[in-house]
Amino acid sequence: MDFKSTNKVQTSMETVLVAKTNTTPTGSLVGATTAFNITDGQVAVLSFDLEGTPVMGNFLTLAGAPTSTTNAVKLIQGTPKSSAIQTVDPFEVGDPATVESDIIRFGSILDYKKADASFGQLSAELRTLTGTVGAGKTYDAYLFLNSVRGDRDYSDNDEVIYEGLDTPADLAGITDTSNYVLQNLIYKLNSRSKIVSTSNSAVNRRGNKDYVVLGVNTTGGAGTVVNTLAQGASVNIMTDGGVITSLPITNEIVTTFAKLVDNGDLVGTATIEVVNTATASTTSNVDAFITLGLDQNIAAYFDDITQVRTQVTVNLGEQFIADGFTSASIAGVEAVGSGRGNLIASRDRHQLTVHTAQNHPHGEFFSEGYQYVDASKWYNSAIISHYDYEETITVRPRYHKRTVVLWNAVPATGTTVATAVTALGLSNPAVVFTATAPASIAIFEAWKDR
View 1 (tube, rainbow, N blue to C red):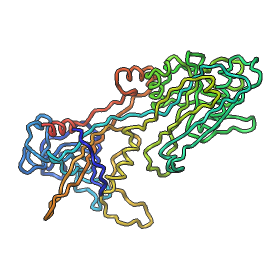
View 2 (spheres, rainbow, N blue to C red; view 1 turned 90 degrees about the vertical axis):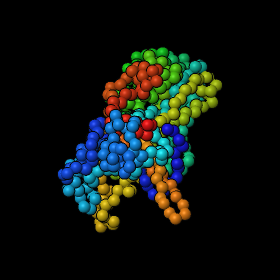
View 3 (cartoon, rainbow, N blue to C red; view 1 turned 60 degrees about the vertical axis):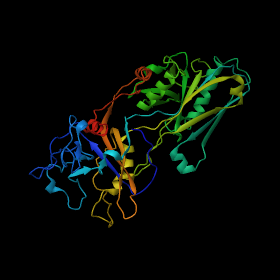
View 4 (tube, rainbow, N blue to C red; view 1 turned 120 degrees about the vertical axis):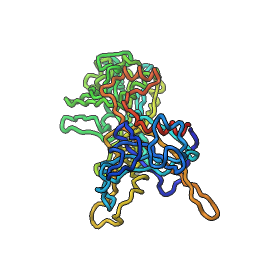
């Protein structure tokens, strides 16, 4: 099913279930003791039809779901209190006995989608010089930064960074004029970057802008080979007055370089060179540069903005245009399935309906009730959009609802660009996540598709 979802905003009618295990119970939910027949973190499909089979209050199984006659179910999650429901906090601040979705009727499912976790990618702009550098010319560049957080802080105005370099009137003493221009321009642009440290012989300083520029040898040089970049490692990108700047390689950076290679914009044997203006006039190792948009910093105490990606656009000046250059770019893509993103989404909708007896704070923090989403984890998800209705004397209004089931996805470590390129070539994610869907997902799918 892939129908158009609603954009109607109403009082939140969303339930978030978090599976900690892929097992699911069988039999009846309620027994003769104070323990429900469901363990902490199990998610199950519960019959909620008085006239169907299995009977109301019993769990559906994978074998029985295709022939089940029940026309209404609930998805239900066990909690730490499911095994001792008499200990549930009467004020509903702590764990409930179970977490349950609204009733999902067989003919009322509007949309069903599953999403796998993904790191996304950074915004990247590649520029390669093809012409001959001239003496006494100005080589300049404009960088435009755009982001959701930037729009919040500065409206729709792009954040603009400008730097330029004037070449000397005599280029005779310069080994490689393109290398000379690019290294000096990269240095100036990086002086504004939040991760690059520079020295003016008196004090070390660092910029505050969400980007970094890397010097590249497109045919391969003495630097770090792009294909060997691996998550968890770091690569030296610039040195100035004895201050060396290293770029930590994240899964997002691995994915970004893999996309550039897979698109044919960059060869995997190209190298990331260390920019050093002290030797720029006597070396020949940089003929291109890549500008990466860096993720914006999250606020220290409270931050409910999911988006962190910075979109960067590079415009080179007139002399670059006159000399000639090639360009390639990829847009930044936000992560999917991050625990932090799911936690924010839960607090924006589902958490608002978690009832507690506290209705007014008295100088203390307001209780938000139970919360099972872990901000530090990654999750795959299944999202069920469905509707319910209310009987009135004259009309039968529909109410749109959503049930979200999350289960843990664990990313691979140490992925290299070469490995990621191979995966992309096979139409697979650049970075592998290992995840096992809870058995209840297959049961629900078998029930809805019967």
